[in-house]
Amino acid sequence: MDFLDNLVLPQSAHHMVLLKYLLVLTYIIFIPYVSILTGSLLYSIYFNRESRKHNNPACSSISKKIIDQITFNKSIALGLGVLPLLSVAFCYAQLLHLTGVNVPEYVLFSAFLMFASILFIYTYKYSFSLNRLFEKIKTVDNEETENELKGYTSSTRNLSSKSGIYGLILLLITIYIFSGAVSLAVDSTNWSTNNSFIGILLSFKTLVTFLQFLLFSFLATSIYLLYVYFRPSSEEILTTEEREGLRNFVLRTGLIFSIILPLFIVITLFIKPIASLSGNVFVLVTFSILLSLFISNLIYFMIKESHEKYSSSIFFVLIILFALMVVKDQFAFDTSTKKQFVILASNYEDYQTKLKESMGVAAAPISGADIYNGKCIACHKFDTRLVGPAYNDVLPKYEGKKEALVKFVLNPVKVNPEFPSMPNQGLKPNEAEAIATYLLEHPSKK
Ligand code: HEC
Image 1 (cartoon, rainbow, N blue to C red):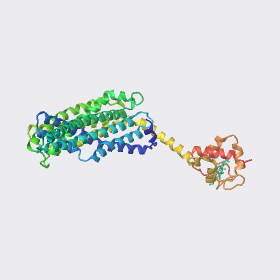
Image 2: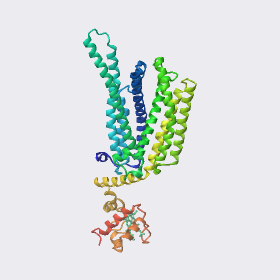
Image 3: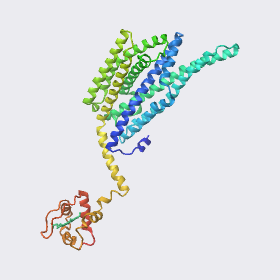
Image 4: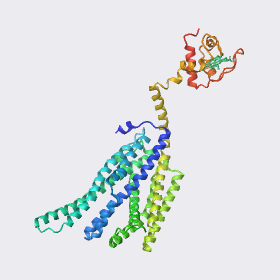
């Protein structure tokens, strides 16, 4: 797929810095949204199953509330889920231009999968309402209609569980491919050798990055739900029974994931290419581990003392933890791609010269005739003496010695006592070369 590469214009060093910021910004939007979407979908499916197993309406209602919480608006799903992926693909296409790695294509592919997954997730969401609708219509005296209604109820149930699962599977594949693409982008030493699609799917790094993402996403979802439903100022949206069920669930999952996450942060550090490590990365890793353990401590106290006082504090700690993790990955990307940026910057200069030549701009400053007319004509003519000597008098001694003439023009020295010294004209070497050629080849010289 070369078409993305064709879209790319060579970037100056400044543009690349901007693109990197754009990348960080996009991650800051995309990762929290997709994390909470994945976690919510999984939790919702879990509660939906529980409700069927134990025939418990409270679980079914929690399940619906969890998925409604994150799927409030369809355009937000596109804006926070699909659009950022397109933007990430575009940034990588520019930043990794000329490396030959297919990171942008893989990210683009994951954007398509993401889109499909969102369609299923919204089907899942609406199937709940449909299901409720059919369950509510109970007062029918006609047996035939009653059977028909039963059929609808079970088929919407079916639709709900299937679309949820399909959405989840697609979402996980999206994240898996995305994790593979991102870990390849950081790994500049592997760009030339190991970048086939299958190679990325089977790579250990992809797996670990993916698992880290999942862990973070479950932790984030638990804390988010804790914040939404249990922070001191939250409205009483849940019934007492729902509250009990959800509270135990999110606190327990939150505790478990906040303890496992540091482990994965350390593992990802070890599998990071050596080229991407720097002092900053280590400092950020240490802080993220501490924050994650701090979160597990707070959750532990809430379980032990059975209250929800820290719900909002934990949420804010989570935001800081997340920011640290994104910045850490960005530092790693920066460090490992230094060489690539030097290549791109010099490519940019070549490109500019070519562009100027094609527009006839570059030819101007190094044309001998232009320099003569612009800089020398005030003091020199070929046949008459002005401030300086006539060229026809002085040029013969430079015949066949262009180097000497270039040297004089670049740095004029006192020659003839009859004349004042010639001021330095501040020409660049290639300009001096051009004017020397021009003078020596000029037809009016004798
Ligand atoms: C401000 C006036 C002035 C300008 C502008 C000027 N020159 Fe001169 N040039 C002189 C003078 C005065 C001398 C005589 C210097 C001497 O003999 O020491 C001279 C001498 C020379 C000589 C003869 C050196 C020799 O070995 O005798 C050359 C060649 C020359 N200029 C080339 C140039 C070129 C090429 C430019 C334009 C890029 C230029 N000059 C612009 C004033 C000027």
